[in-house]
Image (tube, rainbow, N blue to C red; front, side, top):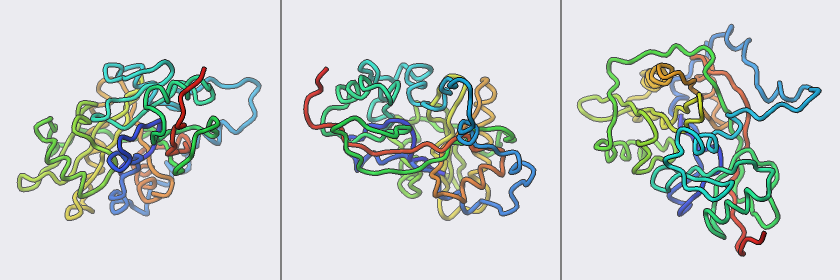
Length: 286
């Protein structure tokens, strides 16, 4: 259940900050008997938005969650140039633009990250002249509609002192980018066995009213025990307690994880595209 998707992201260098992607170990916990009554209620917002409307709907805050987070609850982390913003590179690879249809935002992104730089972006269907698409991926955004959120008696809150052990677990499970200061983004919970961290999950993006659950991973030797699901429920309980709604991202190819998320109460909202692009090599002209 790792995420390597979503929003505009800056990579410095690219091999150290890959595109976020969803957590594969959850496939081992997926159940074929996903709640049929819930499945019948799932409706993709992408399908809804395809229906004719008399007037254009205003963008939803989750259509650009990184920008909403960096200009909202996570503004203390923001490094910003006009209509572009990013997290410090030791916190998160995410970089966002206010509106991907606004050429000024792309110019500001070049100003922020520099020319000839790899940048993961999401939600963009077209790029300005001079931008190169290096890699393309399809994601799924899911929101909590019926999740049973509850604390877990075995889950412990992880602290900055746990970061070396967290990074070791991340290296063994590859749930997506987790950097030395990622833990500052929100609450991270873990489960230990014989004193060793074997599973974790936590909070990443925080657009107003919403919190993303991310970094969900389980040591290969402890999969199939439902640890990931328990931690998702526990992290969601804390999110709900402060009045936010949990959401998640997954790779569209990670069908096992998507089925699991749906079976425990998440609903697909949209299918964002994720691109790894290279900024133009020349200076920005306005």
